[in-house]
Image: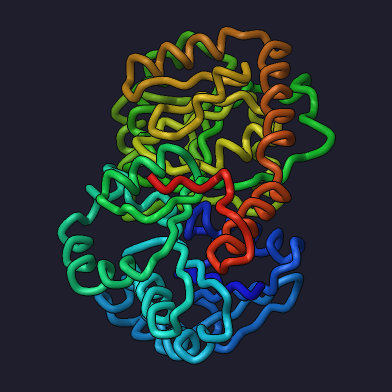
Length: 384
């Protein structure tokens, strides 16, 4: 089984798929597939060899504002056209950028099955951002590329509903992202100083971080032993907007910080007592899974598909809004450290049991075998 995966970018600031897509490729390779992952943004012609192969293509017209925004790459387009016929499946990740179009075009010309993973980009909230540009891109390029898809890959039931609401009727494989779980659990909270609420991820309007600041403003004076950290790469200056709001609200124990990666990111999880994601919409929200895997209880909005937080006793799943988030924060921060630690441990066990990357790779491999006539339709696939 040879699979070519295509994604616009793998920079950390490109968000959750920059972690989850390479991790999926690694697990598919472990399951016996020959996997190649193509992306734009690093040195042209760059290759990384491991359990699977990463190939990096130059970013054409990167200095031209309009053309740069769609992540065009002549090198990727040419290579895909040349090599698609040697693949068994082509798996594209994301929408609204030229690499997503290249994947569809190459699959159509080579008569190879195309799987499209929208990665949250078909949600109502996501479609509301830059709506006019997306409508134009759809009419000019994306619609034809999507027509080549024989199957969609959703990472949650919520994303499946988004795909159907958009009017797409092809089969959908619902396969969540996996998560790497620390085998030893979380270090004890004693001696760490102020207790910490962490919100880590892209600093973008759809993440509802303004709601978080307003909710925290109702609680800050009553919780002198707690602080709030908002951490992540900012888009379109949204960090400045949030800092201005924090000043307007008179908040004193809030920091709005830049991104953390690698060991620094995991150190932030290690000292956090509570994780909060008040997102308006996320197809999976890998940071929730990362927090749970690190042994941290979570407050997430219903904009993310994490109802299991309540079912597994490891967090709160709330409606969007200042009032409900403030109430959840008040409840969570009133809990003794031992209670929050026990909730976090339940979350860690849940991630280890149900969100292993091995299971994700196995399920995706079965989808590939089905699409190429080597196996029956897997249970993870919905055709209606």
